Image (tube, rainbow, N blue to C red; front, top):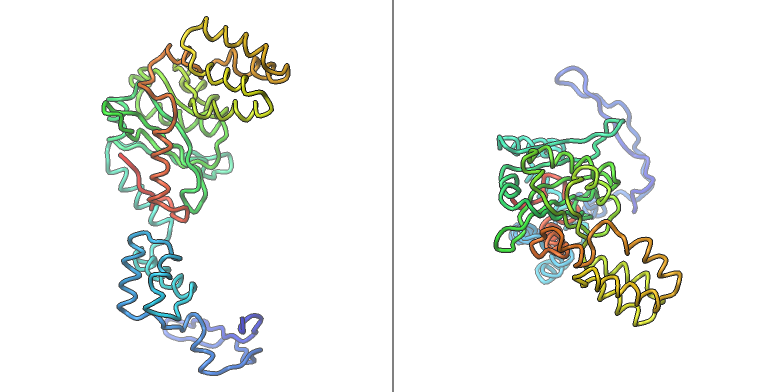
Length: 349
């Protein structure tokens, strides 16, 4: 804080190839000038010994949080501040990247991706030529779609990089019930038009033969995702995650009786049309007119499958929720941290 507002500085310019000259010099300081004080400035502090530096490097490589690193090192060096640790981590990062900028590192990753001759990479731009989305799919992801692509799971993950761009995750499920990556996209927003362009890139990447073989896409109740799927995959059935359906209905029926909530729960698992219609009649008698009007408008004739009655009409391989893709999203967050750049994000192939 002693240096705040200090006008002292020197400005040196180059003259020719081997000469420097002082262009401007102000020697007046607004604070005490002494060797002792100078040695206390953050850029001069040398409080981390070489053996401690090695320990910090190992902890950073293991993705240990800075707050935990300080606790671990508290007994080794009592005068280590958060700024000292931040400065050292910045030095490690700079050394690791060999002085390359974020743009250079991203370009290198994309170039490496394109060495896979069957990989797809699409950069979408808006009218101002700003990036709208970055979609990529490796040859391994394409093979996953070819083998297991009858049912697609779609979701967006948030806060996984320093740009705070959502990540669109497209997955399939193999014969052992394991999730397999089918494609990823960084998106500037989750608007319908953006999601539709991502899905269009996905469809073009896998080819029309595989695209028409998709039977079902499982999502949460996101209007943008629904609208985008209807545009790009009009022939597929859309299944809504039963967990998100239940949460939405619970929020809307918070002022209704316990009986209403019980009927709504039964509606989700109704397997026949007669049972579904019978429960709708019970709901009409038990619920308030306001809630029943809401239910009738938004759920009774909903074109997307949310009840077992409608989910039986197309294959879903037991995927009644988006838990599988959301679990994968949590692993991305664990491995990446939200301060990562694009090129640092690990992906599953």
